[in-house]
Image (cartoon, rainbow, N blue to C red; front, side):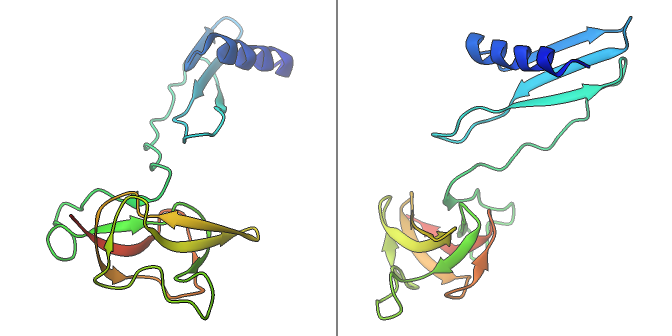
Length: 162
């Protein structure tokens, strides 16, 4: 397999703004499937390269979770109190409820939040990232302790949508 040829296909996809290319050369036993995945805002597209033997079918993958903060869709059972939704971490890092140890928390249980309300800070690679609610509602429960490491997609708060 010629890596230069695959790089050429990737550049062609970017230039022509193609989301998917598939080449099947059964005579040579080569099958190439290139697909650009769903992109987060302000992130460059990265083509995905899958090389498979001719005749093989691509495996179906689960869709990737949405990137970014905000409440997740309500679970089928309606959440903890029938409509409460988890507010998910948009990144991996260290969770802080306040700007400094002496400061009051950004939000507490019972607080009402708006789209631009800062709900916490997540430190990642020595950078303090203010996380905004991006929704309207009321904080029902804080699920993470101050200074605790959090993962991408981990619930940080339970919110009751307004």
